Image (cartoon, rainbow, N blue to C red; front, side, top):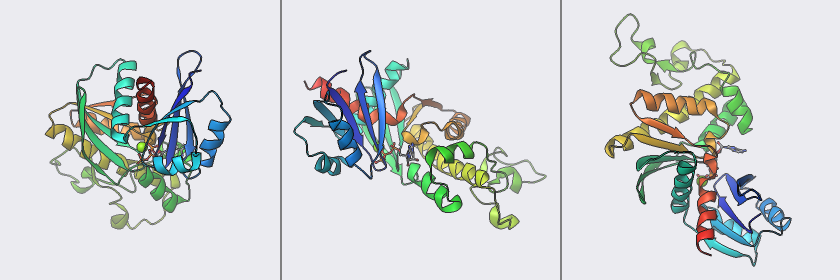
Amino acid sequence: MQNVIGIDAGGTLTKVVYINENNDLEYKIFPSNDFSKVKDWIEANPFIEEIGLTGGRTQQLLEVLNTMKSIQYLVEFEATIKGVQYLLEKDGHAIERSIITNIGTGTSIHYMEGKNHFRVGGTGVGGGTLTGLSTIMTGISNFNEITTRASQGNRDSIDLFVKDIFQGMEPPIEGHLTASNFGKVNITKKKEHEENDLLATVQALVGEVITTLSIQFAEEKKTEAIVYIGSTLQNNDHLKKVIGNYTKLKKHNPIFLPNCGFTGAIGALLNKVESK
Ligand SMILES: Nc1ncnc2c1ncn2[C@@H]1O[C@H](COP(=O)(O)OP(=O)(O)OP(=O)(O)O)[C@@H](O)[C@H]1O
Ligand SMILES: [Mg+2]
């Protein structure tokens, strides 16, 4: 066990990464609304002497930790890209230029070219939107339940597709594309919907908004690859399918990385190790 850990204190989740006896990364998550759990865990693990730290809730976490350990802070975007570059290499991708779309609580979109990167935009539609809308519409707030049930749902009675409008005609764009997310509800006046169907439709709304925006930036930057990261994609094959299929349809190359929720924490860890 190395004596250093990386922490990304995000809007919703605090991600922790450390290096185990076999030189592999180990991953842990804590809710960001109770930093005392992070403090307890650190205190229960005396091997930890140094901390690389990033994320928008860094200051709030520091106030709770109140520790004498050696801490190195790295701004979130730097940490994220550092972590992405690490995971890309580990997973065997040789990508020089790419859009990087981080689907956290909200969504932040970056352009990376070699060692350089900058933020190109973002949207408030993200993982918080997925869990927030899901909770309001179905009462289901547990992330894993949302994603599991979404994968069993069907959007057909809720979303309006291009082919639904252009009935009996040749549509100007592909018929299976969404014309209006949730757009069928007020046309059919069907008020009762299965929870799984609602969850599938929310995932599609979130995934399609994020993909549409990412593709526009990819076209502007003339880059084919879009790396999608963030905890919203963890254990969420349904959302990956929505995003992956739409990205491919638009002739771009979607890349999903294992442990993609931990890029910030990995970057903070590497930065701390390098600063020694
Ligand atoms: N165990 C979990 N509990 C709650 N949400 C989860 C969990 N696993 C995945 N998620 C999803 O991941 C999202 C948070 O993603 P991520 O951890 O990348 O964001 P963050 O770093 O907390 O936020 P930001 O970067 O916007 O400050 C949640 O909104 C939710 O959709
Ligand atoms: Mg984050």
